[in-house]
Length: 233
Image (cartoon, rainbow, N blue to C red; front, side, top):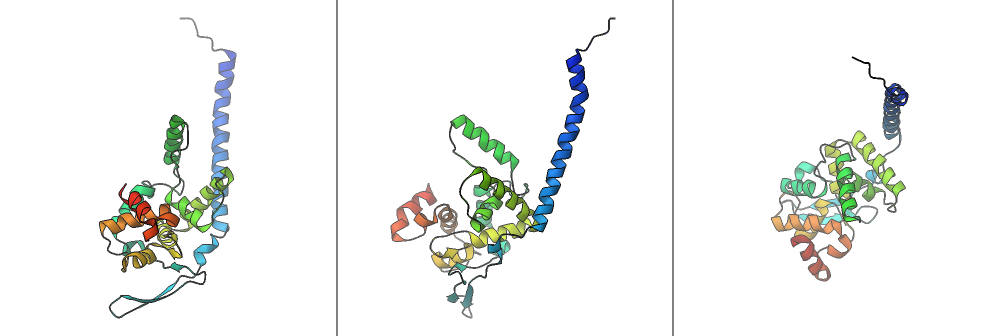
């Protein structure tokens, strides 16, 4: 049986391919190491250290008075386990289905979003994770490619320095609800007169809809139609 002669170019490629793969792997590991070190050494977003409002309550737990935070916001930290689990489940399903699986940036969502946008010929969906949304709340930036890269790094940093619970806690703390109201707990008291631990289905729908357009959806007579359309649509 005659020996099969391999073309010289293919033979050369066969020798170079393992080297190229090795160098690519080495470069990837080096980049990952640099990101981890930078995430550990660089300070977290400054807003995480901001002072919250002080709520003064009656003996029965009702809200008597609120001393606003130094920045004038009604913002109160609340642990995820103190929020109605049905709201949390709906939030994750709506904003970031793979929240507990990704490291702050979701490659699966990025690929899916790119494919959908390519098919439609326009940007119809994004790939921002809940953690990346938190970064934008803490450090608003123009919508540019550079900003996206910074957001991705900051999201990875938050995931490294905080637990998933910690990320969710801060998200629930800074979520905008119109005016000076920030966070799920303050919004529940402001809108419904009670905390976020037990919420009616209509209240959950409202709290999911408002942050997507707080300037035009915060409950008020002027915003009633837009809020109803967003909540029930």
